[in-house]
Length: 253
Ligand code: NAP
Image (cartoon, rainbow, N blue to C red; front, top):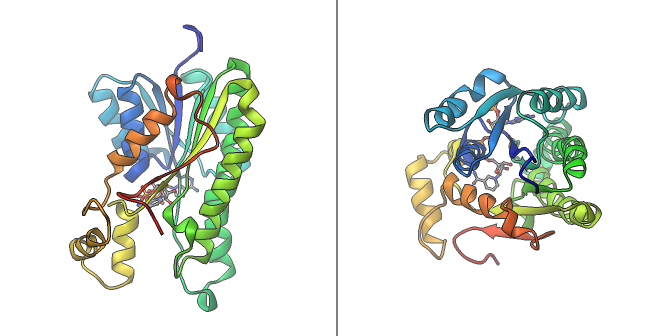
């Protein structure tokens, strides 16, 4: 990456949770960050946190599963910050249910946001990365990719993210672009709080119960994931590609 290459990162689903922590971390690492979320207004807090710490960021509203909105988002990001060379596909939703109760729309929504969203965002981003001869793509998978009761849609999407990542690594490597997946275990965010609510448990009790089954005896934080992403998008990680890094406080069965 030359001195002239803009250090511009795009993080999806960056209004809260893992995406927000990742946007803040990448800004601290020196990147100008596009904070992408469904509504532009939702990204305001993350942008304020970044600018208050002396970093540069803009909030961009886009549904990652909508090709036109993705194209418009990249046009704006390139015009306001420069062509992006870092992409973190983090936006996600849950529509958990046992298979016999899972609706077609539960299936479509989850596959659309995670998998189609990562496809549309990566397809749009690769043009800027190929032009720069440099790029880093990180896709959020999950420990649920190994299978998880009540998550036929989500586990399929998160396993799909791993195959997608490996293919991007093979196709884009010759352009100086790496692609890796981060597969978090239990991370304390609104998403896991919603799961606690769905199963009728207090979130604190839910976290305590989860921690007992994790070798390091705690649940993860959004910053744990942001730290891993920071490494994978760094220039020094140029020989790490097509990998799935489980960040779960221990090995998974
Ligand atoms: P979160 O707190 O629910 O945040 C997800 C963000 O994505 C929200 O701001 C959400 O916006 C946004 N989003 C949803 N659909 C979108 C779309 N179509 N376009 C743009 N943005 C969209 O989730 P999280 O826990 O931080 O999880 C982040 C990623 O890590 C997800 O891919 C998740 O599957 C993965 N992950 C999480 C865990 C965990 O334990 N938390 C574990 C493994 C993997 P709204 O608020 O408007 O919906």
